[in-house]
Length: 401
Image (tube, rainbow, N blue to C red; front, top):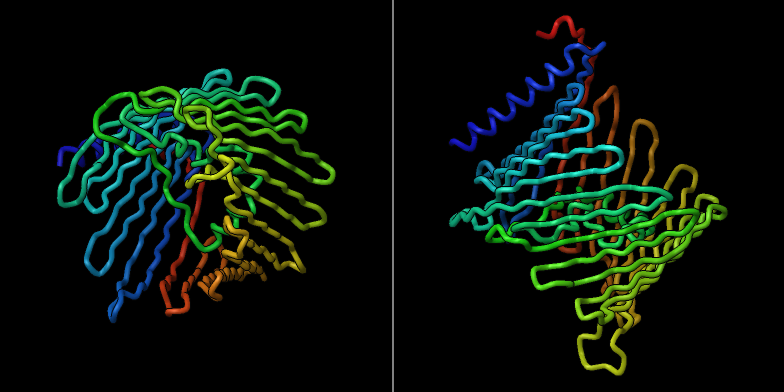
């Protein structure tokens, strides 16, 4: 109860600060949004579950608040609350979650001065279970700067926290992630983005350090990311490549080393975009798991193709496994005929049809209605429908006390 009171007090303070700091402005911008989704999920062998998710959001000139609440037939499931106060060079944010009991509370402070960014995240998390809660604290300190000529440096230090790469969007190799955008686009067509969090461990001790150097200058793209733990160097990842403007051609090589400087992975990416057609090739090699004459072996190959034909976007992804055999084929279709948009994602594996996802959305006057269905060879896996609506206004500051 005391924690809930503390967070309610924090919310009131943030609102008062936001209103007080903007009351003297020429106008007070206000936007809000609301959304509701209902989902149906079969529960084998002959049951089902129905869930609802309510989304609320508000933004008042530098202060934002959002809430996501989930219920199903068994009752309350989760509540996620995000608050942020942007004061220009300084921003304060809080992320509070119950799933269904207290699970996460993260207080963030970010400061930006003359091209240098400093961030501190304090996290209290339940690392136990619903039946046996266990609470532990962690902290992440971020220092970054983009200096000159496309050069940037980022340092993350975790106390009681690991998996710091999730602070950077989960991208261990930044330019590889960028060049593989077509794969990420296909993967996200019917799947909502997951929250990427660091992992809190027991004890408030130094756990992990991540240092990244990157350069993007006159076509040259290169980066190095180094991980340290309490025992010393644990992993290194290098990228080196080049990209041309005309035609839009990029190629990149990446290499991963472990703490003993042994090669554990190699990657080769080729990305080409010309006349509305994008082609990406991704070839990977990995450390041998069984005795082999060479320390690193072919681990997989995948190709992605995207093309727009008369307003319809067609994307395909084909994967081959480490034995050069077909593993997976994904075909995605996107069409938009104002105000209706349709998305279809079909997946095939070595045995044939694997799954299908269909999504439709209608947008009108600041609101949208949507529905999504997922099924495989065994039947329907999930059906959901919902709506989102938003509105905004400019309030007269003379009316704000």
